[in-house]
Length: 72
Image (tube, rainbow, N blue to C red):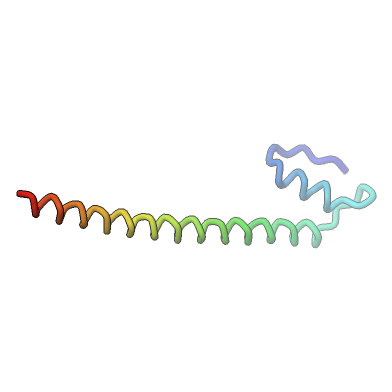
């Protein structure tokens, strides 16, 4: 069974889920769910990282403003 999809990940998942020209829906759904879970983990990690960087930048800005104000 050949599927024409533009998304590379989905295309690979469909290819792996096909055995002897028959689509295994449970296998496909498992792979899709794993991909979504991986995406969610990455998104949470990216959010956490950006939050930490934001806090560090705010801290540096506060330090710089204190230094600047002390020289006035």
